[in-house]
Image 1 (cartoon, rainbow, N blue to C red):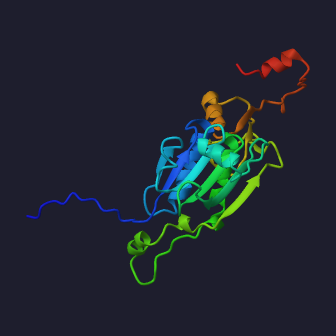
Image 2: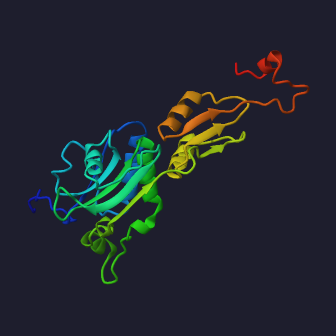
Image 3: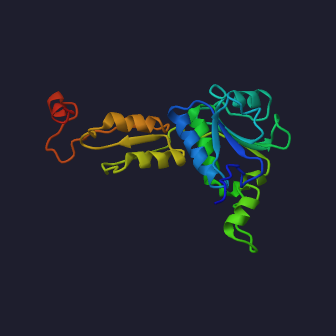
Length: 251
């Protein structure tokens, strides 16, 4: 019987990517999860995630940096050094790729916002533009896994670029118009990916879990406006009459 060899050998020998996030709560927590989901599609190994101040600059890795200048010291350092330019308007962001100023031969990919919502929009922009990535495909001469493990990660082939964006419309939203939102979590996740930030939930009565619905929307950077019954279909309804209004009041 052969003796078990516990030696570990990495299948992917190249320099790996490290995701360095800012605050891990609320909108930025979702931005981190979205960044992990997007980047993982282009990597042949499990992406490592760390808080920015831990050891990111010292790591021998390519860095994906997300967050704001307030929550992420690396974003603040890059902004102060002029490597990135973040507009100061709400929901604005900078998205850039360049050679690392801390580790020779490494890349830095930054998704930074003027606020947490801006940071999320930067990540969403990256995810919606597949042109940023050169998707890996297996070589014709070998099996898929052999070519996958032996090929540099698609992210390493990103060309340098820089862009800064600010929304032209401050409130970008949806009016539900009485339709049921069956899965509000998935609905709000997709709204955030489309960089929308407001929803009017217009029904005769608010949902029983209205607080949970609003909290989840806020964690995606979405403001909730509760609609109300306008009295359509009611005879002689007068919005200026307190007794009539009381008939429609949420109990």
